[in-house]
Each structure stands twice: as C-alpha cells, then as structure tokens.
Image (cartoon, rainbow, N blue to C red; front, side, top):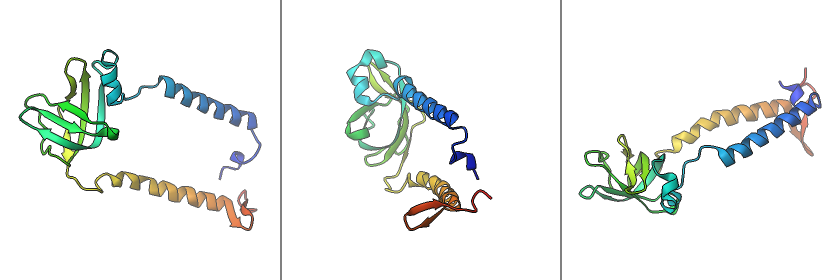
Length: 163
C-alpha cells in the first residue's frame, strides 16, 4: 500500500518531517493555547482574569440553588462555581454530571456561563465516545496484517505485499 514508507527512499525527507513534527509538538506544548487548571486560576488571579474554559462530565458534589453555588471536583480539586441569578442549570443536583463553560473573574471567582447542562449519574454515559476509535483500530490492524505476516521470530514483510 505504501511501499515508500518502509523503504529507504526519501530518507532525509522522512527524517526532516519527523523533526518538524517534533519541533511543532514541543512549540505547541510551550506556547499553545491551554485551558488553565482551577488551582492555577486561584493561585494567579490577575493572570487568568476573564479567561473562559470548559469542564466536561464533572461530578457535582454540592448544589445550593438558594445561594447560587455549585461544587464540582475536577482532577481531585474542589471547585466552587457561582451561578448568576436566573441561569441555574436544569436538573443540577448532587451526583449528576455537569458540562459547562466557566469564566474566571478575580473578584468573583468562577462564574457559570449560560447554556450549562447536566446528565444523570450513570457510569456509562460518556463511554460511547471511545467507540469511535474501534473502526480505526480494526482498519489499522487489517492493514498491518496485510503488509506483515506473523510467524516464528515475529512479524516479517510479506513477499507479495509490494506486488
């Protein structure tokens, strides 16, 4: 299928491409746009003032509609969220999952943006997202087995693979 991939043809270009990908990954990790962690927002409020970020499927540990506060625990960190009046998420209760956009204000803390939603506390609610990778895994395995044959001593290239 891709005979040039496993040969030495164009080797300098392959090495250059790999080095460029490595450089781009390192550069993105240092200077890319990152979502701040909640503890970083509270530790440096001036730096993160006004920053918006998302939380996905975080378990609600406390909900009080009278005071307008929610507590979630992303990454074993207790996060208190102020809910503006009139924007309480429907169904927000303890042990439900919260999907929301937050904004951090240095004088008010974490504010919940409108449009947050909750889901029931079912343990398998988000695992359907992982099923997307199964067809890709099946195709990759089929292509690998088409190119290489298993045998004693490991996988060896098939003689008829280039034909």
